[in-house]
Amino acid sequence: FCRCDPFSPAVRRMHGVARGSRSSEQVEADQIKFAKFRQALDAALTARRAGKLDADALALSAAALQTNGEFYALWNYRREIIQHMVSQSPDAAPGLLKDELKLTQKAIAENPKSYWIWHHRRWCGEFFASLIDWKVELGLCDMLLARDQRNFHCWGYRRWVTSHMAESADSEFAFTTKKIEENFSNYSAWHQRSTLLGERVRDLAVAREELELVKNAVFCESKDSAAWLYMLWLVAHCPAVAPDAYDSTMELYALET
Image 1 (cartoon, helix red, strand yellow):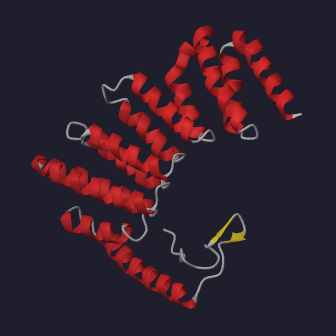
Image 2: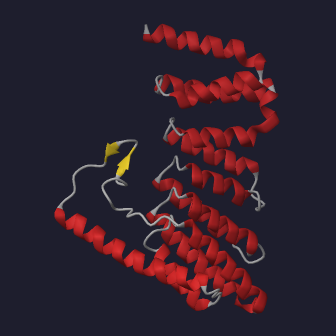
Image 3: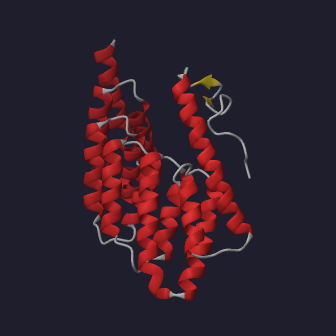
């Protein structure tokens, strides 16, 4: 396991660029936070080495994950515990699911782009498939995408959630339209749109409708690559729309030169 201090100056750099100076109070607060995390982590790892698979072990791992949700080994440990507890007492499943959803939602709020947290949330949906409320999960996606429209973790989770629902493709298509119109630079919304269209994009009439949306985007944000990439995708999957795309490009060129 990594025993480094996640709050150290070396770790507080991204791509070699420091995140900025910090006050002595902030440094002290981080040191206190790390000390609590190390204490909680040591307790959870001790329980795992002892083979504990009970509610106390869940509490110990939760204490550490609430401080640092990136420690993926503890999410693995929680899955081992839950599987064991449900095998021993199936009636415990609803309560366990409720606790996991609460823990992961709080963790996602703190770190909305953590692979490990989203993976655990999805695992819960798979393991407790008969108990999960998919509308609640879709609502969570709506809330998080309202905060950050381009969170690709949430978009991926949304695709997985809707695959378990009777939601029509049209409603999801309308959702992508709304998000794109709010922000033409939303790569994830354009990608979601392409997955929803699938083979239908080879229909020239459909491709021309899509081109109108793209044209609106590139005319408003001509230097943003998101819409241009979608236009390339349209042409690649429906070559017949290429002349229309060319005309739109030349029209924009004439306006900007």
